[in-house]
Length: 138
Image (cartoon, rainbow, N blue to C red; front, side, top):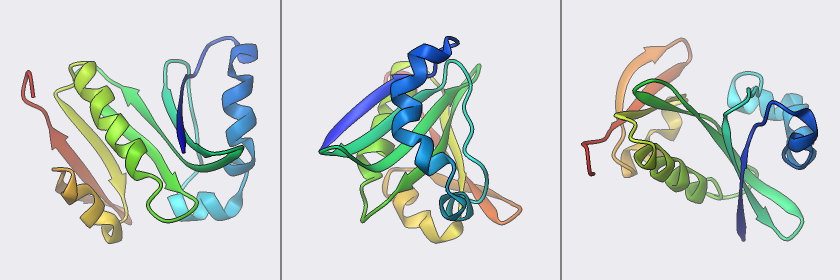
């Protein structure tokens, strides 16, 4: 498997490979239902796409805020293929000196987040907000 990394660019031409890979999934009502909402992006957002040959098997993104990073759209088409993406997002948050990494996901996925040191913060509609705090140099 190969992990591809992209940064959503302001120039649409530079985004062709990223959205060429993800377009089918972004447009899929079944995937939107599983994720609990639409898949969105904006310039500056970092995307990670796990490939097995020419096939997408997982994807996710991270958005940087002033003191935190937000993990968004973590999705695997099979098994636990999202794990390398989660690990890369944690590393990306650390490398950019985020104080914390936050995400909102279903409570049923809590074991995945707890395994990586996240704690549950609060319920947000049908989701739970999970947070991983970083100490400087951690």
